[in-house]
Image 1: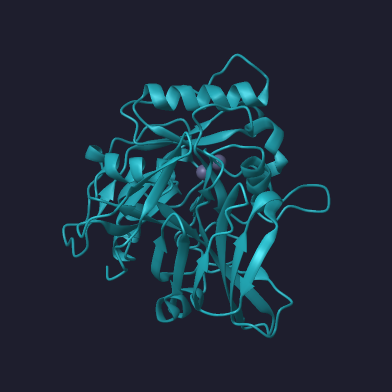
Image 2: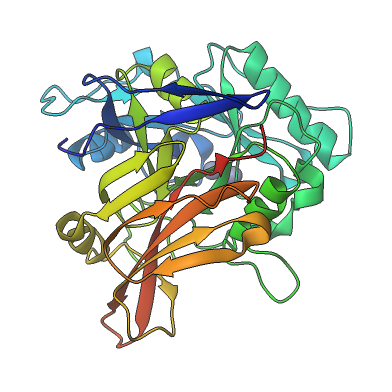
Length: 353
Ligand SMILES: [Zn+2]
Ligand SMILES: [Zn+2]
């Protein structure tokens, strides 16, 4: 991977800045945290096929996140022709009451899903606690699937640092509707209320053999993680610290984040190649003027600044509690409509979080 390796994360503790630099060894790793196999009974490929698909499509890591079933990576035969670094991170999709699903990432045993409570916050907390007890970290999945989970259900959950901002399954309602917030609006609501929670994009892939917009195909949502090494622990820790971006089609050539500014350069070649693939579903757009937009978003989800360019450096407005960037790439699809694809950087906090 030739993506720029400079990524400066900062942490504010008691109003004191601690700025840490990434070393030359730090790299960007592409991964999918959510995929299913024939083991669940409603997906079309074996663990070996799914693993080989991600490996052959340039990914570096994958979680085989089966419903209430722990797939031990040691039992999955991996491709012998390993031309790029690739690992399986052990995981499970904890599939509980009230349609609450949680990816248990980097666990060492199965996580129980049978919480006693009927309260949604309690159920999410049960998944999170069980995941941490199994040595991992939790990602709350597809909150808008059947509109099961709202911001008020999430805000009081402790030790939850990630949720699915984008899920590639066609039935998960990422965009919300007239009565429900989009997942991005849920995120801004949580961030504005003081939660430290990062946005993940994943495939939730089920169908590797029927490719169309009605099926849950691989390759639509992924994360790009900035980590010291490609191990389950290093990737999980980096994501829990927010050292990644989420994508529904956009690759970045550079992402540099310091305590003062964020610098973004879109990788136009890789992005064009990716969003031209038949499995890619964009969000419909009315902007026929700008191919690229970089939005810098603060408290309440308000867009503080828009730069219609494929690259920019933005100096943070530190009067905000947080700032995050949304990278937008538009294209005309084969039906003549304009579609948008995104990358989302993680929020930088200015309120001591
Ligand atoms: Zn699910
Ligand atoms: Zn799933």
